Amino acid sequence: MKILPKGVRHIPGFLDREKQEALVKSIRAIVAEAPLFVPVMPRTGKPMSVRMTNCGPLGWVTDKERGYRYQPQHPVTGKPWPAMPDVLLDIWRTVSGASKEPEACLVNFYADDARMGLHQDRDEEDLETPVVSISLGDSCLFRVGGTERSGGTLSFKLSSGDVVVLGGEGRLAFHGVDKIYPGTSTLLKNGGRINLTLRRVTL
Ligand SMILES: O=C(O)CCC(=O)C(=O)O
Ligand SMILES: [Mn+2]
Image (cartoon, rainbow, N blue to C red; front, side, top):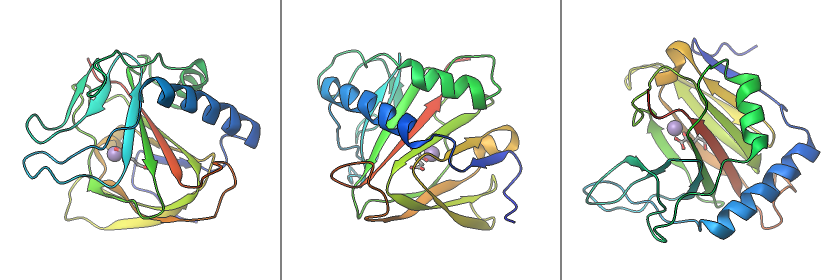
């Protein structure tokens, strides 16, 4: 048995294949309206390896000049983000245990060679409401530690349909994605991995 840091919950196979397919369909509609953009690191302007978009009233964006933030419009089209689909709100209500609704769903697309460095999710004003993460498509190696960067971490695979909740002490746990395992899922016809994170932003 693996012991996760306090407040971190991994729910393998939370979504069955049918639900995963329905979710991919909603994500495709979101991407058609709010195209994937390439996020770049603050100051250095170095592009991240994932491509992203959002749905919900707010979306997480980053660029060289203004850094990490939430905003109501897509950074390229200037249009409001598409609405958050009910399937996502249902998942949130089932697993988050939160009384507030999520305001942002960050959609990350990982091609075979994409990864995400160890970080905390702390651009929200609300650092108490859990973050709920949903994995679709190819599996990945996920790494999670405690609330200090220097602390130990443990790694485990996330597969299509898995949900991770970062709540309680785990809300500020360092986490990242070390690698994608190409060809491990047939859900996305062109391969890759989609991660959705549902976040409460304002207090
Ligand atoms: O892809 C994942 O599983 C994690 C994504 C993540 O940590 C983020 O978008 O902040
Ligand atoms: Mn994160």
